[in-house]
Image 1 (cartoon, rainbow, N blue to C red):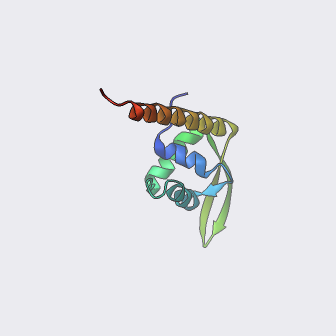
Image 2: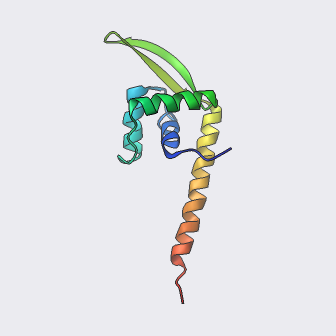
Amino acid sequence: MASLTEPAAFVLAALADQPLHGWGITAEVELLSAGQVALRVGTLYGLLDRLTAEGLVEPDREELHAGRTRRYHRLTDAGRRALEAEAVRQEANARALRARLRVRPA
């Protein structure tokens, strides 16, 4: 599997504990990324469409709130595996970068 984009990885991470609706996903992504990733509505829903097509996320339920429909999404088993693979990939990259920093030129 190809590596995930940073926003995609954070969306999957946001959904790891529970299904969320769009606003909940954007808030959780901002929290998880310490404000480094801020998703706009169009970006979020395009990303959710792609992740759904890839089988990493799926619709959970819809509920009516203040006259508007909230669509909840949840992480699939494939999404959990993809997120774990991405975490392993990023950890390996971080180890390689730290090892390079320890090398001092002569």
